[in-house]
View 1 (cartoon, helix red, strand yellow):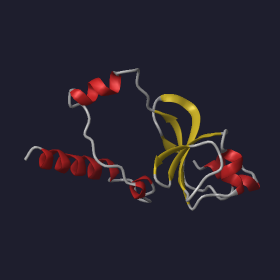
View 2 (cartoon, helix red, strand yellow; view 1 turned 180 degrees about the vertical axis):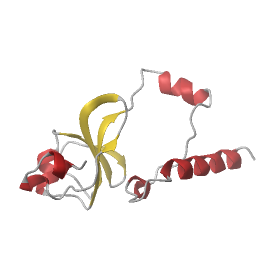
View 3 (cartoon, helix red, strand yellow; view 1 turned 45 degrees about the vertical axis):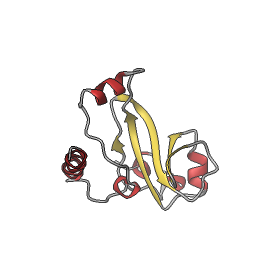
Length: 128
């Protein structure tokens, strides 16, 4: 379901895309990832021009000036101190460069397979 469907108000009409699963932590929490040249609300810069905001902390700023690209996520994934570093050191994760365009793909049906293929290619190149 989309934010517009969940909150049937004129204010939320622009947000018609489905809300995505962000992870098992705080599944009732709503997070927004969006592209903007600049943002006046509370947000973390993930990449130049790509932000992460917690809803409702930033909802007024997002509603007053809706960004051209935005995706909402319910919940997030989190780690205890040192946990992620340990998992990376063991090779539990495939790592690749972040790209803002990937976040906003319309067709996500093959996203996981495409990202795994891309990360394995990077790992293979690094091993040469």
